[in-house]
Image (cartoon, rainbow, N blue to C red):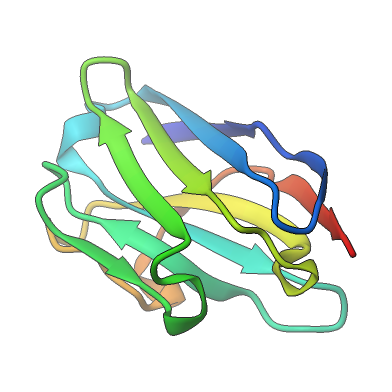
Length: 125
């Protein structure tokens, strides 16, 4: 198993930037494909970005393309989400997730078996 802990959320003005981190412990981090998801109040949890186990392949939902960057440092057991040009509609609780179902960057939430507790991101207008 793997345990995940997110950090880096907070309050930022529209147009600003934040970097989320997700620290992993337990089984070897490099054997998991990883993803970032978010859930806004009253809405379903949706994928934001995903990355393959070795970081060479990524996926982004359309609304964040060109603004967000997912990356990982397997030596530090850490997943990142760099968020630039933030918009009020990016406000949500952000979760990192891990899957051992294969190396590719999975976009489907059901593939992921391990989740962090979430970190709040609030973008003011």
